[in-house]
Amino acid sequence: MEDKIISTIKRYDMLKSGDGVVVGVSGGPDSLCLLYILYGMREEFGLNLYVAHINHGIRGNEADEDARFVEETAGILDLPFFMRKVNVPEIAENTGLSCELVGRNIRYEFFDEVAVKTQAQKIAVAHNKNDLAETFLLHLIRGSGPTGLVGIRPVNGRVIRPLIEVSREEIEEYIRSNGLKPRIDATNYEEIYNRNRVRLKVIPCMETLNPGLIDSIARTASILRDDEDFFDNIVRKLAKDCIRTEDGGVSVDVRQLLLMRPSVRNRVIRYAVKLLKGDYLNLELKHIDDVVGLAGGCRTGSSINLPGGLAAEVSYGRIIFRNDEIKKVGMFYYEMRQGQELFLPDIGAVVTAKLLSKDEIEIDHNSLTAYIDYDKVKNGLAVRNRRPGDRIAPLGMTGTKKLKELLIDEKIPREKRDAIPIVVDGDELVWVVGVRLSEKYKVDGSTVNVMQIVYRAAPKFDTA
Picture 1 (cartoon, rainbow, N blue to C red):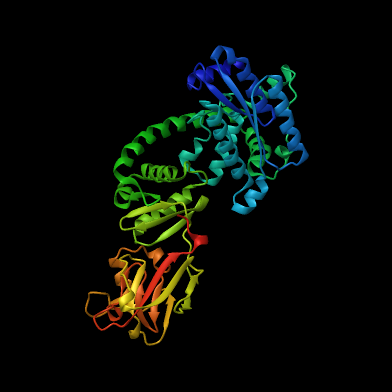
Picture 2: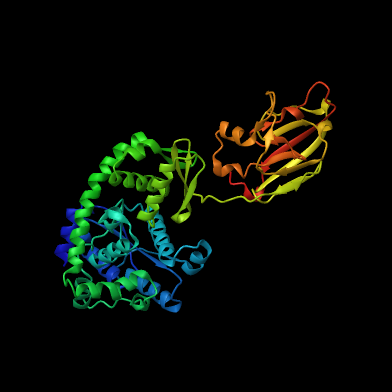
């Protein structure tokens, strides 16, 4: 088996002489095998090994024993040891993500930290051929499409998988023949996770039809990987013209997207998501179809939420992917009082109103501060968001204009319009914050009393 692993390492150019390698070790058979294999070839490849272990806080004392076992193993091999203990179930509950996804994210974040600290060039993890087959089937069940069916890549950035072409049976034989005593995670045999169900139920059933199932899936994944690499080159060339980063997001030109063949278009969408968040995990074919549907409508302001807290929205001929879900703002209305701060919990902002004499004012020209003739206020001021039929007499214009038309002219995305606060005097619009003041309330030569109105993000909501 060692020869097969060395062949894999060379085929995919996983290691170079003198590389520092962070080895993720759980204490189970796969990772223990990986550690000892790399330890055995450290002189041939001139490797510097670092052992990294995550205690996920899932199995109580057993998890603590796993950590002690890995630390002792690292000591026996005289290798540096790094460990972190986290509470994955608690994080999963707080974030709404699955324990599997949280655990994966935390592992790789920790391994990256260790690699930076030790100046290691590579991170080695113990995925094997059976893991590849399980991932392939999980993605097939979820409808991930060809890109997802590639499954686990032998090399992904600085992450390498030297065991990816050996089976779990070969690993277990290596463990037995070398007298190693790995830790066994009992939860691997419980049908509490989808991966376990695939491993314990789906694959054995499919192997009755094809005993060589694992090898067949590995070959299929390899073929798909070659195809994906070909398409990836195409997508990267297209990305120069149709994808750009803007305002904290990644956007795609709708017209160009819709002209692409579906096989390319779907990959462009995945590529845009990957540019934004580093991967496209949990982005299934149905989500891709939703984005294509959004592009087909091409209605500025229309939006959808995507997995992982992402959102896609149409804005003037482009689909913008952002890291925040679109949150709907309900109707709100708050009365204003001179000299007091008014907190707007619906949008996380504060409005203050201060009465000044005309001689006191020093006009601050910015879109979040307004000065009005207070003597023109008839019914008292309040702050609300838009209502059907709203009209305003825009500063510098004669007559009135529909608020909806004004917001369109100002290119305010539809999904943001309900969150724009509006200062009103009864039914009259005084100031559409950040957009336009009313001509009817402007300060002029006859003004005596001036009200300064300032809008700002509330401190607890301020993300600057």
